[in-house]
Image 1 (cartoon, rainbow over the protein chains, first blue to last red):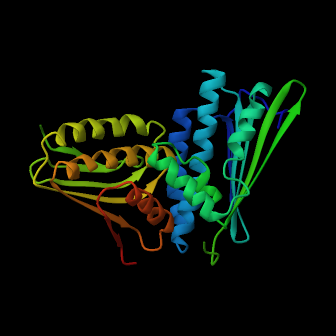
Image 2 (image 1 turned 60 degrees about the vertical axis):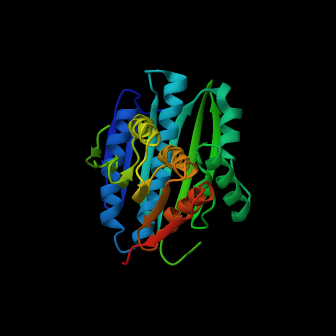
Image 3 (image 1 turned 120 degrees about the vertical axis):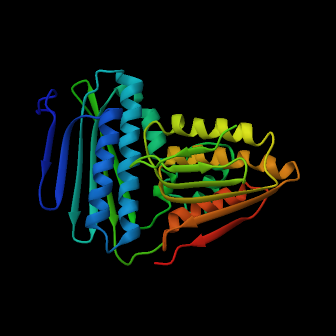
Length: 175
Length: 126
């Protein structure tokens, strides 16, 4: 990934996978999400509630990347990688984002929000936040048994990357 | 004061807020990055409305999808309506959601926790 030209935007579409490599700005995120919503709605139509769950993951992560880029890179956004792949009854989502080494600990705290907690505890956290007019962020993803969330922070040669892998199983698994 | 009517787009919901009839409808999807700007328009209208609300206010929410930013904005907006109930006027809350949409139901339940009136839940028939 580090070898890819940072000035190039790339969109690749396969039968069951699409990839994007390039900067993630507010404009890109909004346009991309509109296209993805329609694609998911059509492709996962038999599993109606699942397409929204998949979309919510992409939505939240893409906007988080946008927030981060605006805050730390102002207008000179580094390239990010986003892929969506349909694999054997699950949608696998990958996000790779360049980050500043100085922001690693803060990001780790955010990514651990709600981790390893039981659903009822997360529900209570959601309730408290909404009543205080705070965003639920990734909490709603954490309460779902059909979503597996993994992330890794990698440092290399003075740069750092955040790699996120999310698997959303669709089908008969219920909350 | 005027009726607030906004057509839905791919990323922003449709709105019809009528200060004369007290009927308020919000429907569609909300996942724009700048959802705060959209909801500010609605908050400004509601702020004006609650200073002199209709005898009965009925807020019907029928959202297909809300991202976390929009959830926060919507919750703030809806909780403003508690003021109507405090003034002794009637307030009705209707939360409609798609068949099987457990996430939208859950969010509606969070809203219910913050309201001084009970929310009526209506699951749409598949």
